[in-house]
Image 1 (cartoon, rainbow, N blue to C red):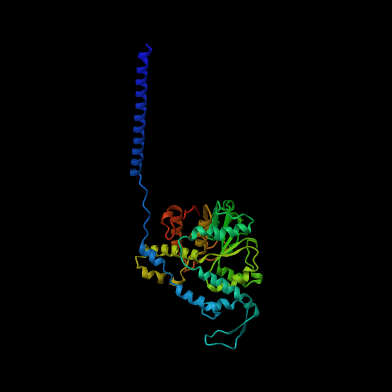
Image 2 (cartoon, rainbow, N blue to C red):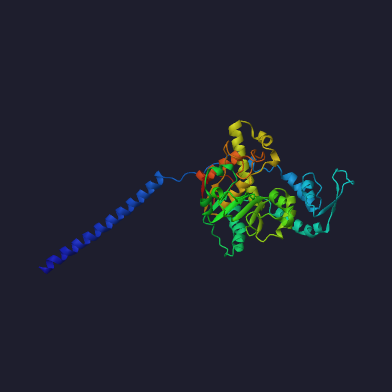
Amino acid sequence: MKRTVRPVFSVLLFLTFAVTLICRLIFRRGLSFFEMETNVISPRSPAFMFNSTLLKFASVDLGEAQSKREIEQLLEGKFGGPRTYKTFATWRRFNHYDMKARPSNSFPVTFRSPAFYRHWLDFRRALSGWVRRKGFTTDIMPELVRLIKAPLDRHNGLVGSDQRYSSCAVVGNSGILLNSDYGKLIDSHEIVIRLNNAKTNKYESKVGSKTSVSFINSNILHLCARREGCFCHPYGPNVPTIMYICQPVHFMDYTVCNSSHKSPLLITDPSFDALCSRIVKYYSIKRFVEVTGKSLEEWSSAHEGPLFHYSSGMQAVMLAVGICDKVSIFGFGKLASARHHYHTNQKAELGLHDYEAEYAFYYDLIARPQRIPFLSDKFKIPSTVLYR
């Protein structure tokens, strides 16, 4: 009896093993087929194709030749050019004038004081270093953590990290802020960036009271440099200042004021400036052609050509995009019934900015980040929200 059962049991065991093996092979093939079908049904969306003509046109710096000449003159110590003289003449501490003596260019003769020569070498060194870094690179955005965040962390007594800030609020100066109470929401961010020394006093419920970074253009610093002690600290002397250069001659203001700053006074990298310039120009040209139907060549005369420039707010937003994981934008936009600035009575906009083009950029930054030109594919754009 036992001899009869053993062969039967062995056959059953073999059949069970064979069936199990066949089922596994069928399941694996089926799973592979399902994955293959899934890949076929849901292909990756193709990369957005930019208009190559617009990209090329936006890459041309119409003011480059003039800027190069001014820089060469400044490095040679010639401050008498038509654009730079007015700026230089305001440095009363450095200059003495003989109003009766006038050279051929009709400007009064300037006698430079010893104080000027004490700052001259620092000015020349700073301007030369800035010129050497001028150019364009698509890889500047990841570098902002090292160039900007690391010095800020050191100032705040923190160990430098290659991680971005968790959240940043960029507070613009539009009068639309008076229609909302965003103060507490703004102050809840890890970093709060304010523009061009806009007031917060008496506006705390609207714009908040916290300030981590003061972002200005060099025209603001030039006005500050005329004050005693270069006072330029509406948020307190310990709040860091980040500045972009409007005119190379403003490096003299930087060298004078930097020595008195308790907190960092940082200048944006010229490669970062070039990136911001190209992005805004691309959006401006694109909008000009679509709205007016005119040719690309007519854009220059409509937007002041070499003087066309991005706004301080646009570059502050780009700065936050580079150093923050989440960016919240406040006070960007306009209404016919609202002031241009919430803290002033100014109504007109500057002609050298194209705010409508910048608003289109903010929309893409939030809803269609893959459509922003000139950014490296390796750079990850953070989550961005616009509050109005």
